[in-house]
Amino acid sequence: MRKRSIVALAVAVLAVVVPGLLLAGSQGPAGRGDSGIEVADRFWFLHRDLGPEGSLTVRLTAMTGTITYPPPDHDEIVSGLVPWAKAGIIVKDGLQRGSPYAAVMMTGDHGVRFQHNYRHDVAGNPGGVSEQTPRWLRLTRSGDTVTGFESADGAHWQTVGTARLDGLPETVQIGLFATSPGDLTLREVALGGAVEEVRFTQAVGVFDNVSAGGPWRSEPVGEMNRTDWEKRHRASAAVEKDGVITVSGTGDIGPFSEDGPATSGAVLVGLPIALIIVLVVAAVEMPASGVRNLLTIAAASLMAGLIAVGVVVPVPRVALGVGVALALCAVMTAQLRQLLRRRWAAVLASSLLIVLPYVVTSVPLLPDPVAQWLLRVTPAAGFAARQTVVEYPQVVAHYAPSAGYFPLSWWAGLLVLAAYPAVLALMVRRRLARRSVSARKPQFHRAPKRTADV
Image 1 (cartoon, rainbow, N blue to C red):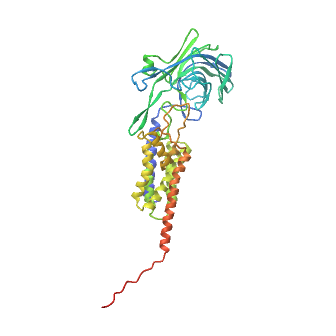
Image 2 (image 1 turned 45 degrees about the horizontal axis):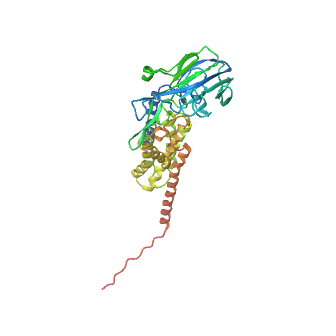
Image 3 (image 1 turned 30 degrees about the horizontal axis):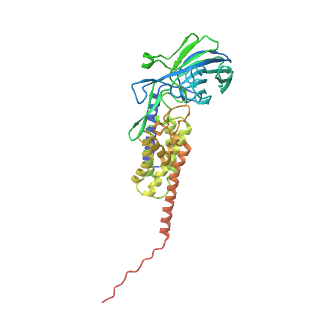
């Protein structure tokens, strides 16, 4: 490769690394679960010590909540629960955010659930709770095994779920909790795109018949009582009166941080610039005919992607996947250079097919279904390789391209991208075959006509 092309690829690497490291360094601290992912871990906790063996039993008689300023009346505070508001019993390895836990709970709209270690969710009986139809909950610990139970009458119990929390210390914390994630709505912008709006909510659980134990301590996990609502209306807390305990809290316990899913796109903002540089290098390095530089171009693009993404997103699958995507894009541009015979035409064509769909779907410009289809049928589908968002049924989120969620899996996206250079390779081969036949074909020249002498 030419020296200037190597310099250009080095600039491409810096275009990804420099803003990526700056953005990664500016992100605030967050809880991290057992797999190292950022998690939401914020709730009010009324708790006591629990040894290697033991349990806690309560009766939940009411669950209410508050949602601030929901649409369409954005100036009102209404009573209600978001679908995944939670109140119940939790066992947790201390109060550190992101530490292992298991909980049995009532939710706002999904009945009784057993959840543990942020990503795991098991459904119990559906339905709500009221004074007429209370719900008994029980959580037991036996060594590293935690089991959640539910009952309608406190006499007949049904197992909801069991979890093994390896490495639990001899003494853990068990108690009552309440939390409520923000109310997510979408506001239409631009050409039909949507941006997320999240509003403060709070959940309140009312418990009685709490089994004996103590002493109890009441405190939040994560920051609480910071919003105007909590300061001026009802602060999150645990209050006991005449054997009835009311726990109110906000936040969430789940696989995403409260700022939303952690996406690689948040730090790979320089990737479109790097992609354009790779396309230009491929068009410049590839001669109008012949394929001797094709492997060199692909290998150089692969290495540039591996280095750039590997520094910013230290996930091997993401770094390798984006590197492969860049290599395939370079090959595609080189093939277009052979077909179109003009560097500028090859760069323009590949930019329209790859860069444009990638950019317009990464911002809330187009309607979500349109953006999703663009990332299914264009070569930009290959950048699903940077997918780090997992869709969880127990989390309400905006699973859309503008929020960093690709409609195809990483491997399916790479297959769609690979299909384009595969088709272009056939077209190049046919053109070369026609040229070869034309070159071998004998040429017959007619003798010029002679005019008769007069």
